[in-house]
Length: 197
Image (spheres, rainbow, N blue to C red):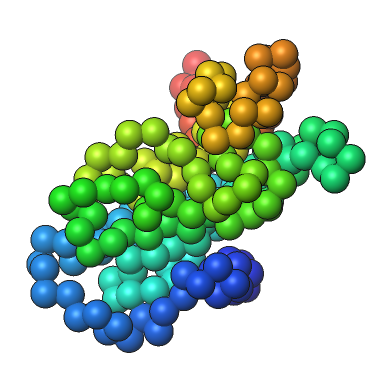
């Protein structure tokens, strides 16, 4: 059921394909990369209370929708900055991803539209993840996005921000960061065994 909600967001954003050999991949290295991304991404999602991850296109998948259930900020229609806890991002690995990585082709902001963060545009579905090296792994992208949404990763230079208003606001409200202190991945429980007398 969780993945169905995530997939619905992907259909609305045009990220869904048939997943039945839309484009036959003959590149064994890229196919292996995609298989590893599926395995590691799903392992992270299984170990998280804050992340839902749905592969939405390709075999192995080249597109995913990540839904973060962590606290971040949005701007209301009245202009107030308030917390929200449902954010969605599309992640696509184009066929040439191991040779070149264009962040605008790889990461797409799906919602909410009124997100409030210097590195996420409030006018277009664009996220600035910084420099993106070819072959950056899905789990690394998920952690970067989580750090942005929770305000652990913030650019406070207006000349380098996608949302200058959020950048200016951030400089005056540093005491609010991070918005969510929970980890993306649950910590493994530690059991301490004490020996008897």
